[in-house]
Image (tube, rainbow, N blue to C red; front, side):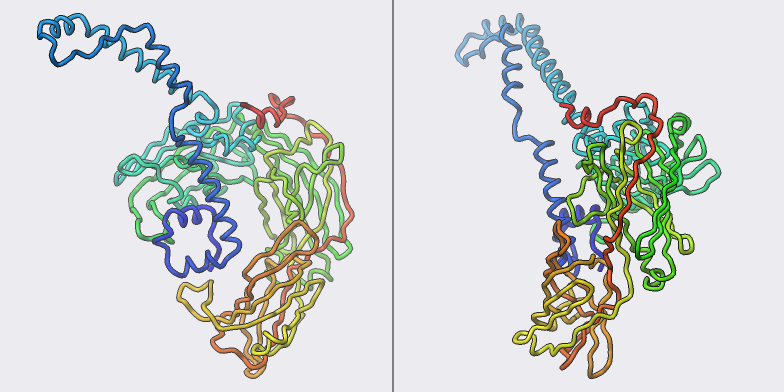
Length: 543
């Protein structure tokens, strides 16, 4: 079973009681899903505390009482007072009561407006410029500063559900829009739509990209995509064929209907602001990876770095057919003081999140890479590119033979290419990745890992029958060090009985290469008019 993405995890947390047994078992046994669940729960708690305070502030109460200090408010009549007195009071009091009520109403409205004028609340209401969503996304805030926010005025209703889009930011690097969906009771609905049904096309009808969810608030979902090939026309068409609310993975509530929409986006201003800087640097690693830098594309909302890679004959022969798809480049950027301010794929060191996303196209044996950053100030200051390494799956045959029934007293040790795993036990149990409660062999392992592990390919061979079974690691792996601690299980799929003698083989190693030595200064780019003196700290430190 595949791990859940963020949208599915948010749905899982909300609807865990309805999730199937197989899905629950997978989440409970998958370290990646467990980490994502903790992150999503923490984020939801922060939103809850911010959006739903327990009570009004003391200042609000003081302001209400102060505004009523000079308003004459008559005491309530006693039950034993004569009717004539009550009538007289009633004749002269309506205006006073209305004035007092009006004063209170005006103050309440003013207080509400004051609260919503505060960035912490107003930005949440505006969704894609929410404080927690966009305060660190300086590219998005730069685009807003330059007036690149468009309102398509979309409002579609069906089956009691309403879909609204009133805010879109788009330029030659990316598109982001805030989508609000409410149910028949007016309650917000989030993470229930497959946004790949929404496409972005050019004026000739060519599909440039499909959209996906980027989370958002409890009320409005941020839907986005990158445009790695840029935009060559002055208009884009966004077309959505939304016919279902509810995800199939949680099928207890799916609403069929028609919430289709279509609108155009004016790209003329955004295209005029796009700046391109050509790059001419090249490098070949000792093991045969060739890197060619191509260009930097600066748009109001982002910076896109474009480069290509290829393998020489020796390294290319070691990579299996699917290996190129799982390759990663690792590098970082330094300022003029030599301080690392942006790291890419450096999972062995603390990450500095300025990268929005990375994409690649494989054309023959050549990889074309597109890295999109929300912040890369090569147009304002000196920036240096430093290559740290790369990982790529390569074919291997490291193995260890053992007797499963003897592991508790005689653990086996797997060694290969700097990695070491101790196999301490083996049993037959439920396959945590199966929805059908199938059995599998469970090898308990722990040890040290130098390589990447994510795209390793393992098999276990029953020495008596000669049959091989695929094996997958599930457990903890990570930390900021060259050697990683590993603790978990190798799940041997399809195994129903313990073999007398077995061999564990790693057929593909997700190999980590660090023997590189290359860096260079990025050429100074032309700044975008209106952003010449913008400092990201001004956004981050805004009250």
